[in-house]
Image (cartoon, rainbow, N blue to C red; front, side, top):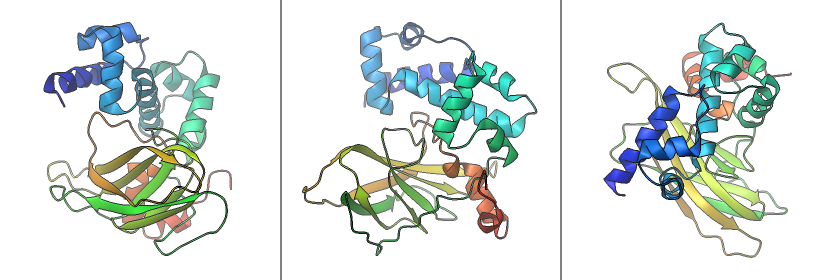
Length: 267
């Protein structure tokens, strides 16, 4: 893709990150990108897979998650800091995207047990919907993914938010089967976290893969699909679903029995 376009989109995303509590309009973004509003919107969606407004909303909720875990600010203060005038609207969107309320997210320290249903390559279920199967690969240039768990989910768009329509949890990159996918247009998103892979900071590195839009309809011949894990870039929308958080994978890797000992929110 044109380097000029990538630099313009990156400039806008960094401006979003630095001004999450401020009202940011599409005109503001277009001026930062130094393109016309119409051309900018098309360009941004081409690079990121979603509109500028939806990308900004995802960044705001991701920052809210961080503040809930790293500060003692109230939920009301956090909602204001990330650009919401109404705590009710903020809480509703947070729950819809992350899967639990802001208060519960803080109470559980961001740790939510993995998605309950484990679907292995040999697992089949009869019923409505179409089977989607394929392979998760790892880019040869990427460092080894540890602990190796990969979540593959079927989502309504390019953001991993809300509960996936279908999902599979793999112990490592490899084959997956997603039975009973309803008719519609979907995105296949995958994520894995390599724990402590940055040799300078010891931080976890997130690997992502995306494919879509993918049209699924009954009677269509199933074509295996390929997902390629790569390090997450600034152009990738944040994964908002709590079960995909880095903290969850880190906790599972470093706390014996962490996944089994944690209680589901509301349980």
